[in-house]
Amino acid sequence: MIDLYSDTKTKPTPGMREAIANAEVGDAQKDEDPTVLKLERMVADLVGKEAAVFLPSGTMCNQIALKTHTNHGETVIADRLSHVLISEAGGPGLLSGVLFRQLEGNAGRYSAEQVEEAIQPGSRYQSPTTLLWAEQTNVYGGGVIWPLEQLQAVRATAQKHGLKAHLDGARLLNASVATGVPAADYAEGFDSTWLCLTKGLGCPVGAVLAGSAEFIDRARGYQHRIGGAMRQAGIIAAAGVYALENHVERLAEDHQNARMLAAGLAEIAGITVLNDPPDSNMVLFRVDETGKSVSEFLEATDEQGVKMCDFRAGQIRAVTHIDVTSDDIERALDVVETVANGR
Ligand SMILES: Cc1ncc(COP(=O)(O)O)c(C=O)c1O
Image 1 (cartoon, rainbow, N blue to C red):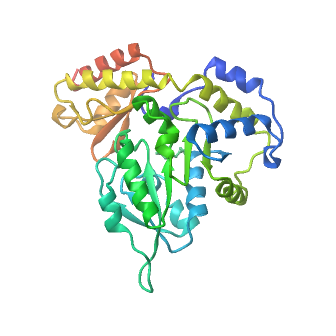
Image 2: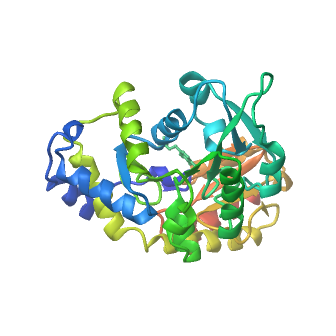
C-alpha cells in the first residue's frame, strides 16, 4: 500500500526504534526525564523561545495554548480554514469558552488589513479580541506557506492592539525547509508556537509547545489538569530528538515528491490539480471530469494499492512523507491514470 492519506501515517524507522530502545528516562512529571528535557530545549532553541513543554499531541498544544492565552468570553481571530476550528472537536468552546472571528483568507492566510478590521476592543456589548491565531503551513489550504512578511504584518497588527499571538506549527519545519527561512524567524513575535513530531518528522507520538518561561510554566499547569503530564516519557521523546537530528533536512525530498506528483497528475486527462506546484508536501486535486465521484475514485485507487484522502469540498488530498519514495509516486501516478481512464 502506498499511503498518501496523510503524513501522520508514518512508521518509526529502524534508527528511530533504536533511539527509542536506548532512551534514558526519568519521571517527566517531576522534570527528571533527561530525554524529555533535551527535546524541550532543542525545540525551544529551534523556534527561538525561552522554554518548551513536551505534550502527547498537536491538538493538546493548541488547546493548552488557547487556554493559557485567553479568558472565557474573549474572541480569537483565525482563518476559517484553521485546524483548530475544523478538526479539534469544539475543544475551544469546551475548554476555553472563546468565540472565533473567522476570516476568509487566501487558502488559510489572511491579511493585516483583515485583522485591523476584525479587532474589537471590547465594551459592555462586545467581546474583546485578545488572541491572533495563524497556522504555518496551513493544512486545509493544502500545506500552503505564509510568506514571512505577511506573517510578520499580521502579528505586528495584533501586537499593536495588545493581542497575544499563537502560531500553530504542526508543519512549521516543512515551511522552513521549503523556503530556507529559519523556524525562529517565522515564530518571532508570536507568544507561542509548537512543532508536531508525528507528521513530517515521522515520530509515533508527541508535539512540543514553546513560548516564554512564564507561558510554559502556566501551560504546564493546564497540562497536568487535563492529564497530559507523563512519566517516563523519554521513551517517546527519544524519537523526537532522533527526528530533529536526522529527519529535518530530508523534508525537502517530500516536497520534491509532492511537486513530481502534482506535475504528473496535471498530465492526466480528467484530473484538475488545484496547487501545482505545491508549496510543501500536499497536493490537492479534483476528479469531476473523470465522471467518477470522489468516493468511487478513492475506492478504485485503494483497491489498486494507493490510499488518498477525501479531503473537503470535493477535493482529494495526497500527502508525501518519509515512507513514500519517488518510485512510489510513479506507481501512484500509474494507478490514478488507470482509474481516471476507467480501466
Ligand atoms: C495544522 C494542524 N494543527 C494541529 C493538528 C493536530 O495534531 P494532532 O493530530 O497531533 O493532535 C494537526 C493534525 O493534523 C494539524 O494538521
